[in-house]
Image (cartoon, rainbow, N blue to C red; front, side):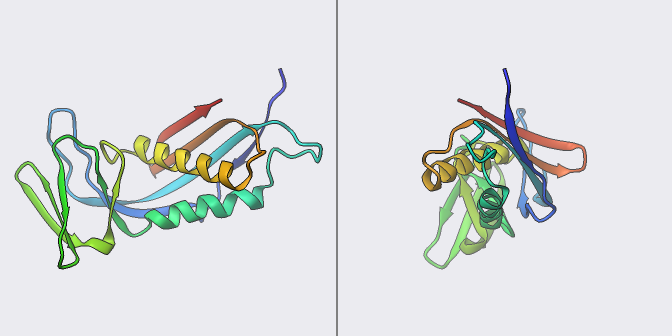
Length: 163
């Protein structure tokens, strides 16, 4: 079986965000940040023009997703113990066990994930990328999609979708 794909690993496909990871034993990291790097591989059928999809059509979509997350504090909205509340004064309260935080709401993004791991960031980016590709290029046949999010060199979370 033959297979075709494009692979995108551009320096500018990145986002800087704050987070803290919550561990299985209930302990957590201190609030800190990373300069996350994103790569993407898209498998698909080769068109009559010899393309899976044009690189220059995909890169702006990935860049926009990264820009959405850039310079924000990312909160796991589906964690069973973490609580957040957007206040009327333009601030968001975040509580995890005995730790309480307050930040400007415009600087906080609550993601539909259960923890702020590189794996979950890769899944959020991958699912949103797939949705935007289908919305923009309905006829595009994506057989597989692989998104990686590196929080530091040699350490990355990976999301893979297969049709």
